[in-house]
Length: 409
Image 1 (cartoon, rainbow, N blue to C red):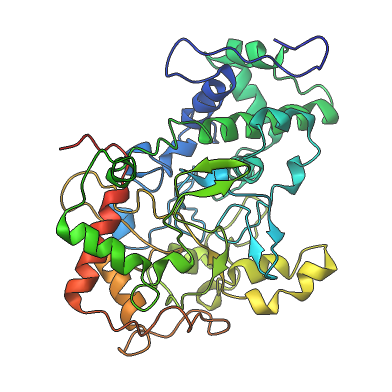
Image 2: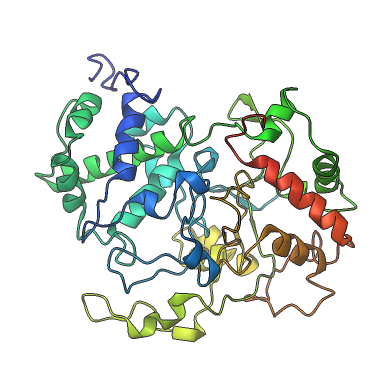
């Protein structure tokens, strides 16, 4: 219900799941198949059992890009993890002159849209990029393919949880005017971001967290992996994936294992990416999804910046070509059973943590394929680390301690 003095909804704790009403609304929307046709939910590409990323081992094994609601349409990148993403700040240039924050691999969900949104105050200072990101897939023709904002709101209004919307916002999800439609569609993003910012999505329940609380011991191999992970003259992984408690938005919290910056690791093209064949698949208006076909190159953050209206940001496009968002390493090894295939990096080129760590270690000294984008490749922090195979295995063992759901067994 709305507070009469502030106009801001007063949230009540839900009776189930330990979520607020707003978070519970977001969860319902997240798992609802709001698409055209109605066969695709956010959870279809961001599954809780896999750390809120792609759940299909067959897809992960090859192209790693998930099909949309229209089955023969594909986007261009592997689903990033939605877990711990709500901690990402609004995209900005930090004191070192580099971009930090935003969501999506290329940072295009900057969070700027929600900076002055009165409903976004309910996110309590974090989750603005997540709210912006959440709105993109619904209307994307290669993802959920909803024909309009109104259509999304109509599906919510017809759902079994429509009462919860009214409980939170004090009114139904109307679309009688353009302004009303825009306001309520933004509220969809706020609700999803609230759920993605909840302890259900970000529980901090890994073995590493238990270790940091003094409630678990790392094995000899895991402990060695942590040492190698942090050592500047070894893995140096903490250069982008901080592993120690830090201040965030005024709160002292466990590490997120990402600094929310962008980097070009020199990852090769994934030849199985289905987006390369999307020059032969057409949208409803007759245009091909990917007119460039096999010549398409993923320019990452630089590609987003080169068309940004801010001239300062546009001028920085060149130095950011090929850079992709640094992902959290939390749940990076979370699987569904032995032998499950999970894909890594923005295009899913790598199929195991061992392969990925080996690439970081040997990129510049073994015959790996050429990077997809040769500009701005990080040659200072990876590529010739000199790790032994045993040391690579130790780092992998440590990474496996970052999976949520540790029970002490």
